[in-house]
Amino acid sequence: MNAANILTAAIANSLRSKLRTVLTVVAIVIGAFTLTITSAIGTGVSNYIETQIGAFGAKDVLSVTKATDDTGQGDEGPAPYDPDDAIVGAGFAQFDAEALTEEDLAAIRAVEGIVDVSAVQQVNPRYAEYDGHGKFILGVNDSATLTTPDLSAGAPLDNSGGEPQILLVTSYVDALGFADEQAAIGKTIQIGVVDYLGEMHEVNATVAGIQNETILATGAALNQALLDELHTTQSVGRPQSASEGAILATARFDANATDEQVDDIQTALAGKGFAAATVADQIGIIQTVVDAIVALLNAFAVIALIAAGFGIINTLLMSVQERTREIGLMKAMGMGAGRIYALFSAEAVFIGFLGSVLGAGAAIAVGTAANGLLAGTFLADLEGLQVLRFEVAPVATIILIVMAIAFLAGTLPARRAARQNPIEALRYE
Image (cartoon, rainbow, N blue to C red; front, side, top):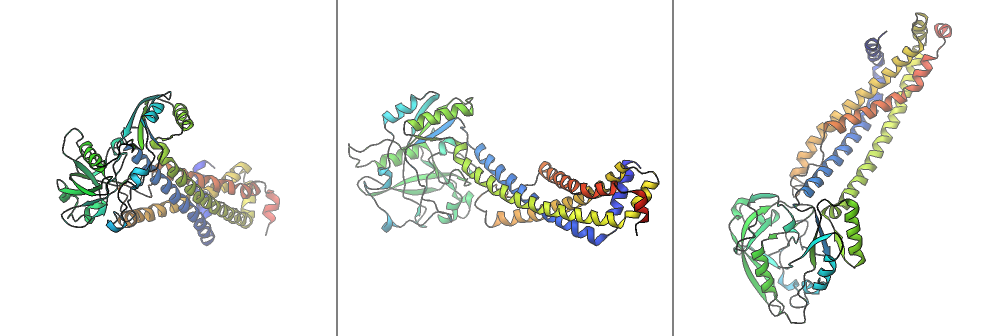
């Protein structure tokens, strides 16, 4: 009896008691389905995060700061601007933040491994408005110079020209009254900014493009000409005693630096009272949380598969008992214990294969439909995010894992069948 004959016989024997086999397969399907879904979630989110990191054009940069920054952007898009809630003048948060002085920049520059340091010019506009359609709080992405924008319309900023330009995020298109993203390109919007005397000024800026929001940076990107004009305007009335330093600096290091060398630089900066983070650091916590959630869900799926494994044991033990005389006859005709063991093991593996393929197939079908639903509703603001991403290698690995669990579950019944005494088995009623 060769391998092909054993496999054929195993499939036929598995289908003898169809109801019992179907119930066992269903248990495996549930475990395989769950494991495939959770694996696809992990793959999809990880791929999205890697894509976001890949959008950054400068991976050899540390963001160094003494303070945190808030964009003022809400989950539902830009919030309406309320002048009654605005605190203007020198007490505004932008002037309260602890600034990086020239001495601080020199201290950062002196750290071994730092190649260059530059202060990021800080501006804090209050609102954006277009053609009287209402004022909305404008969040600014201070790290825009480090990114390659994910444009949905228009062109990147021109930092070499003198025309003030802005890249709006997609959520501002409807709010500001534009018909669509393309209609916003080339239009002039008004940006409100408060000076040190508490007076509001408006600065005009041309919409160069519309960019998709990312998990790393939500906020408008400004070109250098607009930054300079806003900074000059908000500095009107600034007392000589007030600090003009930026609260954020970018420190470049050798692009070929190892992880250990980057860690040493960050440790040295921390020792001097600075917080420094790379792009990977800023997004690492998100990846950690996602990995933890996926691992927890995978644990539940594995528990379900282990429970299904006991179902396989029960199914095959009953099969061995029902086929005791048949086993005795096979041994009497010269079939060795090894081949009988292989026959029952093949039955277990076939049940595992059938359940895993059906479970994985159902997961792919449900996941594909869910992707379309989520992309058009809950995750509409996260362009490019495919929550469930099914790839051949992970799905194949899951099928093999389930088959391995099924094989281990079938070991006990297979051993019992292989150790049957042929004479006693033939007498079995």
